[in-house]
Length: 399
Image (cartoon, rainbow, N blue to C red; front, side, top):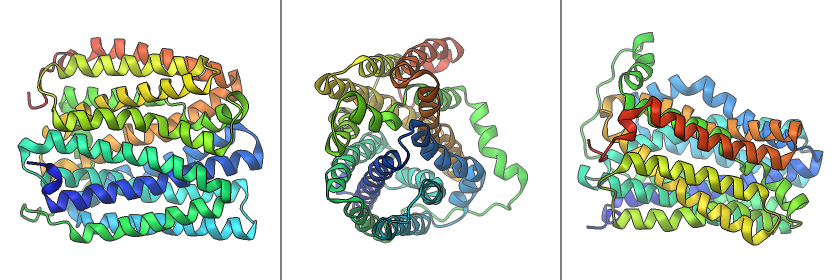
């Protein structure tokens, strides 16, 4: 039976697509606008940093909120706030008053909203489909993100040719529809009991992760891989200064990883992973690092796009394995707190990775920064195979 035949999962899935499309289109606009204003790759790194800081500050609160309150309502509120940030960008672009500082402030608010949205959304999925379908649902969940990573950047890049207000207006509309869809989600399981708020209950997610080597290994692996291997913050520099293209080319570059990822995600949705998931996880991470190196040394638009497609394909294999392991090994009453910590170490590593890329690019240059990240990714994969043998030897997602 198709997972999308479950109405609640379908609403959940389309909400994910629209929200991510909006965010990606908005990110392309902010990145290009910031680089046009300052011409400094360090400021592109700051865009990632100001999204990372509120997520770090709110992580433990986010998990407790997701375990105590209606997760559907949390999603709606977060996406409404994200729509408001896009509206402010429209007004600021029309008025011509956007500066480096105001762009960073708007992105910080966006980061705070996404700090609540992403872990809350992830905790909903296991309750929307029967347990035997969770692996397939996870692959479709990943495909939603990757489909949006194809459409969103391309849409943002092409609309930016008409002006930043066009890109930000499209993001506003997509956020608005995404905010309405959670109202149509029905959760079959009984209401969760609300345990009293205490320091121990807030920190219990960290304690649970520490007690589970497979979960700890999966979360920390992604943190360091994305921190070192993420070069997306520097794509505006590659597009303009190395590949000699414009906003439309930047949109294609940002969409390329999604193109590779969605093909693999669709395959995994039809043919779920059943054995050898540990070795496959580390192989995928190694390919991710090698593709990053290829992208860093390329001066051809075609080769760069191919490298990013391979990078995205390898990444989605890693995502499906890691996310399925975490969700299947975590009880529902703890899922919000565990997923919030996971989001801190995985999702936010994208923003911190952006800052790291911008910082190293300002120190060593853009190309050396990407090459160092790719080499570091491969080294981390080899090291984690030794530190977390249980993760390396994992044979199935349910083991």
